[in-house]
Every structure is written in structure tokens, then in C-alpha cells.
Length: 246
Length: 394
Image 1 (cartoon, one colour):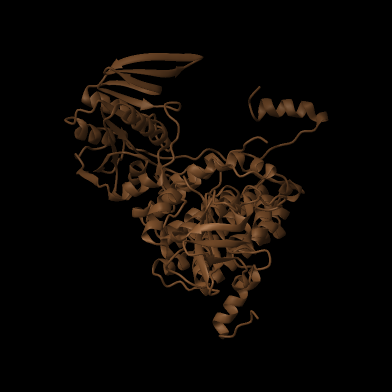
Image 2 (cartoon, each protein chain N blue to C red):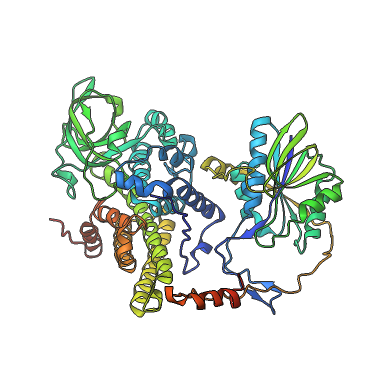
């Protein structure tokens, strides 16, 4: 089975988020970048499990600049066989999807996996766009994935229940929590990552279809207010008028 | 005790990450992820129960914590000294006892077999020690010879087709479960030699030391040799004299210098978060000058120790680090970590003495680390001798 896992970078979850240029750009200085957890923990790890059980090959693909190679090395350390970096600035979901589709269109992947979204932009658009551009079936936010006889069986979490879906390969899937358990690289993997090469592919020249006009941080949370037992009226009033929850 | 989420993030006040390679960071982050998954949830209980969780051994082997700098042909990871330091930092961030287990295996068992052993010994032991399939311990300290190991009494006699080993070693990490011991003993000529003793040799026992108030999640014991017949091929052929064990200790002390920073970082991280959340007199205690003094001094000392150790790691990679430089770093880091733990304990108030926070555990652990592998005072005398040329030991 030939599997492509598309990976993205994301700021570490403890990053202090600051914007510049009139709130149009994220300040990237001193940000620690990690492999986007949905791509890593669920999509990549499930791909590796399928390869280990059924044989095949797992290629990871990233759209971005050369400094993304640290997260690609981590994917190698976890067990990816090959890696591709498309040397394009992923300015919007379409640029990213278009570049992935251009690369993947003649590679005959059985599965193309994405995390359901990146934890910084929460767009969740790229997987669907790639499926459309390649004219493949797309299943979003799968929390379980099994493959047998060229057919994928997936679970999706729906309100108060689970939906079970079957689809023939080839297929594009975005992965949700539950599809696999986080894996910790071992030293053999980290050492193997040293000697593997990352294939660099030129951008396809696609232009962005959308522009981020501005970012806004959520309003500062106000501190905790304490009410004593004899201030019930004030508490109810505050919940109603200030917090607007009752 | 309910397992808590471990949100530890290392402080990096001087952007030291810029001095590390991507591979260094991947190794460090891997060790941290493993500690968060396998150590944090159970460490408090393991310490309360004074039990070494043996399931850690396999994981330590997998993340490369056993002999990271041993060449790959012998099963090691072939990493540099900074990688080794970072691994020790992350393990000790979890617990000094955990780091001790890894230090002993790497620096006190694998290092001497690799450095002083025969090719047969290297091939026989190192690959299994690297995975944790085989565990080792190191016998130097004796009941009456700690800081002065050259006075040791343990000895072996040449019996023609084997050696006959007699004596006892004390305060030996990993002894109760170790498969082999690298033992330092005097030969017929009175020279200190290294000899590998395997579990199962008649007359060799490893009674466990109970009742420790420190390193409770690490297993400590004695090595007792009562007319133990040791095959001649178990002698480490390539070293004679005290420089053998001291070479091992150089490697181990380097790891401790980095490791103690990990314990300090954990205490600082906990104290900083606690101080920002704990409200007294109507505001977080982090807003009071005396708390800020403690926290500011902690991060200053941690940052200084990080820079010292990074420089030492570079020197060690270039084979230029002297034993005296390593002594300085070990002494500085451990003392710093102990001070940080004590100050962090005060910031936590009463909460600091409970297992809800890692502080008291680190502090009690560090009370061992400050005297093992060369005491705080002895390391001072090593620096003193190095700069004056005068021996103040005796």
C-alpha cells in the first residue's frame, strides 16, 4: 500500500501568540515549531501502523520553506520511509492543496492522509481540496481507520453516536483524535532519520485565493470574582448581566 | 494518587535552543515525551512505595538513554556529548533516581567496558546493555572508603585458571537487579583493576539497601564477594590504577551536571506557575518582591548552569574537557539545583512537602546527588588543587 501523509508545522501549544503589522502577521521569532499534532499522532501514526501490518510505503509531504525540515526529520524518526518538501510558501489552503495535488496526481497513492486541521489555523480545508483536485473520494474527521481488500472502513464521531463509513481506495482522509495513539520516536528511528534525504520539489506557481485581513486575540479574561454565601442576589445578577449565562 | 497532566516546559531565558542542532532538540523532546508518558504518572507513587519501576528499563533502552555516545557497532547510538547531557537533563527532570539508573548503565558500566575492555568483552556485553536486556552496576565505594577509593580493601588473587574475589561494595545503584557488576578491586600487586562479575557466580550477592529518604524510586544495594571465582577473561585488560574508575566518574559526573539542571528546571517551572496562581493578600504571590527575588535568582542560576554545561559539552566533544572542569560543573549544578529546590519549596508553602508537587522529592533526591560521585567538598578541593597546584586532600 502506498500512503502519502501530508504534514504541517504548528507553533508549540505553549507559544505566546503575538501579532504585528497592524495585526496582519503572526510574530514567528522565538516560536518553537512542532509537527502538527493531528498530522503526527493520528494520520502519520495510523499510516505507519497500516504499513507495519500490511506492508507498503509511507511518504510524508510538507509544503513550506527549508526550515520546516526539523519537523520532517521527526516524521522520519517516527518511521516514515520517504519525505518530500514542496518549496512553496503556503499562503492559503488553496496554494497548499494545489501544490500537493500537482505532486500526487501521477503517484498512484492508495491513501492520502491529513490531520483534521492544523492547531494554529483550524482551517481543515486542505484535505477536501486535494480530494477535489485529484477527483478522489474524501472522508473527513475519521476517528478510526481499517483497510481490508482495497476497502477502507472508517468511523466518524457524530452527535451522540458513531457513523461507520466504507469507501474503496484510493481515498483521501482527514484524521481525528482516536485514529491512533501518540508514538514516541526511538533512538533507532532518530539515527535512521540522519541518513534519509528529503526530496525537494519546486512550487507549482499557484496563487492564493484568499487573504487573511486581520487577526484578533480574544479579549483578556477578567480575574475570578468571589461572592460570599450572603451575596446570592449579587451573584445571580452578575451571572445574568455580566457573564450572560443565565 | 491521581496522575496529573505534566505541562513542563523548559525555561530558556538565553535562547539556548539556538545553540542546539535539530537532532539535539529531537532527542531532548523525545526523552521529555517519554518521561511525561511513562514517568510522571507513576513517579510519586513509586517513591512513596520505594520501588524502582522495572518497566522503565525497556523504554530507556528505546529512547537511547543507555550508552548514547557508545558507537553504533556496539549497539550504542553514536551520539555526541551534548545529546548525552540533554538526555540526562530530561530524565532527571523526571526524577534523579531514574537518571541515576541510566547514568550508571551508560557511564559506569558501558563506558569502562567500551574504553578499557577487550573486543570480546565489548561484543559480549555492550549490545545487550544498550537495549536494557542486560543491566549493570558499578562497584567502587566501600563501607570504609568513599572519598578515598585508593584505600579499598576488595581484592582478587590469581589462582592460575581463575581469579578469586573477596570484599564488599556499598551504595551501589542498580545492584539489586543488575545482571553484571563492573567491580574495581586490587590485584596481587596492589594495583586497582576492573573486573566484570556476573550474577550467578557462587559467593556473589547483592543485598538491597532499605530505608532511604532519597532516590526512593531507584534501587540501591551492596555487592558482597565471598570467595567468588571470576573467569580470567573478565578482567578489563586496558587500564590499571585509579584512573580507570576516575575515567568512568568523569563521564558520569558530566551527565549529573546536566541532569541536576533538569531537576532545577522542574522545581522552577512548578514554583513559577504556583506563584502566579496562589493568591494571598489579594494578589498572586508572584507579585511580591520576596517571591520575585527567589524566582529571579532561580532562573539566573539555571541559565548560568546551562551555559556552563553547554560549553563543557563542546569541550568534551573535542576531547578537551579536563576532570577539574567536570568537577566544577557537577558541583555547581547540583548545589544550584538543591538551592532552587529549597527556595521552590518555600514558594509552595505547605503544598511543597506533598507529593502533589515534585519539589520535596527532587530536594530529597538531590541530597544524595550532592555527595555521590564526588562530594560537594571534594569537588571544591579538586578545583583548589587545579588552580594552586597544591594538594589539600591529605
